[in-house]
Amino acid sequence: MRTLTIGEFKAQLSDLLAAVEAGESIVLCYGRKKERVAVLVPYAQYAARAGKRPLGLLKGRARFATKEDFKLDDEAFLSA
Image 1 (spheres, rainbow, N blue to C red):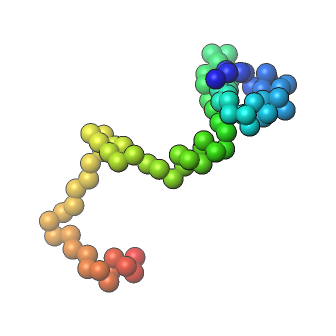
Image 2: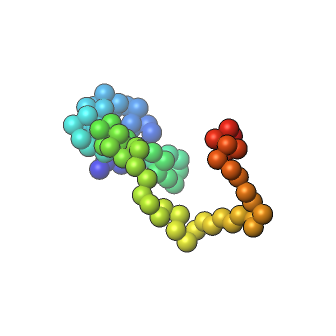
Image 3: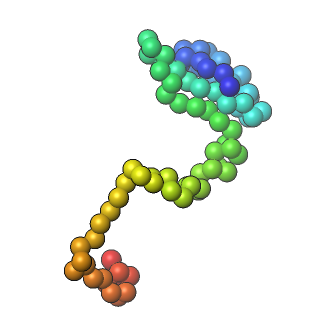
């Protein structure tokens, strides 16, 4: 995985697209601190993960509660 600044990326765009097409991932950095802002990955790799979300992703980080008097019948649920 290569790491490049935006300037390097712009100068080598055609070569980098060929590398990504061949299966390589490229990290783009920006600013004085060279913070990582994006990753270019082959589309096949992106598409394989696009629709999948792991179960328990927010376990221990999120919660919800419903009130005891909350009632919603099937008709109201389907019409919403």
